[in-house]
Length: 156
Image (tube, rainbow, N blue to C red; front, side, top):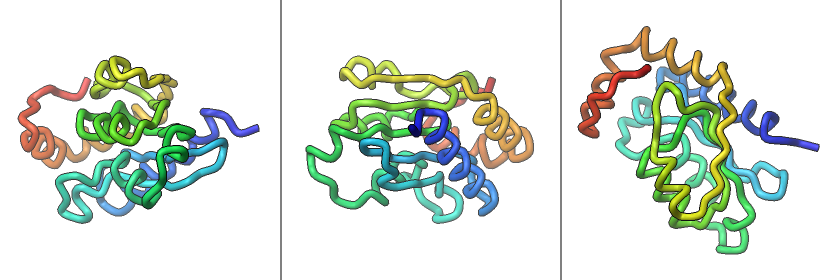
């Protein structure tokens, strides 16, 4: 039986795909009843986008699902989702989010929890290391992305 670790592995592969394409290494996978509905990765740099975070990409790539589909889904993401991505999870009634790690960057997990979304943090060191390596080797890109949203918080 496929479990959270299996689907997080797929999200990590998406993060690696983003990094290979010159982007920020964050990946996401949307799963319904043990089957992958869609995958996505951060495309901010590659597409010169302001909204194509990994979670948004995965939700977009799923197409127009109906309410019954969304309420049976779990979103897997390598890093803690930001307020925009968390808002999309709430909007589409996705009841569960599994996060690879949240020590390098804390997103809007409390927003999810306050809206009765189950939040599971795996503390997967591969997610942390992939992101930290990117941030260290591309500090100017990461600092620029943080400045766009008025966040001056440093990566831990």
